[in-house]
Length: 434
Ligand code: UDX
Figure 1 (cartoon, rainbow, N blue to C red):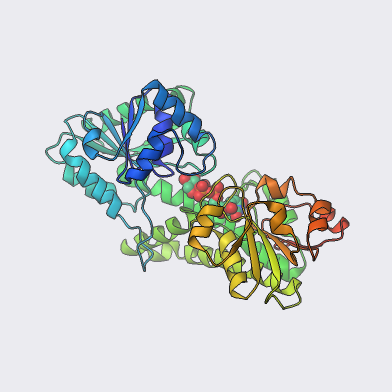
Figure 2 (cartoon, helix red, strand yellow; figure 1 turned 90 degrees about the horizontal axis):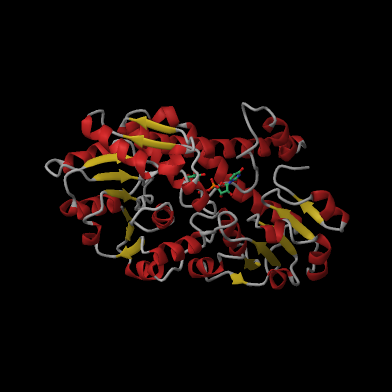
């Protein structure tokens, strides 16, 4: 197999496929990233990835290259390059998909299968298929649903596998190849859904749109709860017991970020507009707006808690990554809150177990402390914006109270035991909580 594109998705996919017995070559245009991977080091923070890389390289089944020609000879080619937001617009930027596809074309042999994993606007696979005429290769779409921080787990034990293919003999043959490629996961009963190309592309966008909508729904309820004097966390618990609703993705707070949900819902809406069905997903604009309002709200809570004066006040910001178990700061609500507080003149000190280097490179204007306690020292207020165990579970209000100047805590993820913090003399502020 080849895996083209070795970012958060491709690097994990390559290592995972090698771990289940395939011969895999990972390809990326970024020679530095390839050198890092080839040395058995994960180029980003992802639990279990380094172990898989080391094992795969040692077994001889896993290798990396920055030359597309090295993909020749592989029977299955997974396309896993990024599809960021276009500069200045909402649509997905498909230039990396197109470039990778074109670079792969001369190396294809009859019978090869290309499995697209990148998140693309519906219609992309049909467009790419036309370029395969004369090669004898077949394109299928095999969207990926992994979560950062759980990527190895989600890749090896997915909750479903989706393969979109054309309904002809070559399409059926390609589906069989993928079914075999996923081997143990399929044998252990993982649902394996075969669809047409367009449906497979849509599944990914629809899944992310649904998850984003669920998070924004509860954040909208948080706004109502704030106005009504209710508690959104208790509300979410009560809703979540309804098995038709479920408690997951009902965590109210500063909202969603990362390299997927924000840009994927925008690209989904942009594609719907192109298809003349913009109104069908008009609600995604609200989902986006609700989400961004939560960042404003968190900043407002800090400002109010400090009596309206943040200029020159020292604020400890616990978290920079868009979520725990990740060093990813793409569209991170955590960093956004820190940047806004800094913009108001606060003396902001950010700490994070994994994302400080990425954060400091992107936002050198912020103060940083690698040690959590150093960040807390002399703080006038503390804001928790990424629910790492180091803050959520391991930080006692008594210990923190001994370090800070002012016992004000804003819980941007509703992840702390409010009663315990209040009992230790803290002024506790949640998001949408009494
Ligand atoms: C997401 C999808 O879950 C995954 O299936 C897809 O393949 C890629 O996009 P990921 O971006 O890794 O994965 O993060 P996820 O765990 O879904 O969290 C996204 C954001 O939502 C984070 O910022 C998280 O903090 C936030 N979130 C999540 C909430 O604010 N509340 C919740 O209840 C859950």
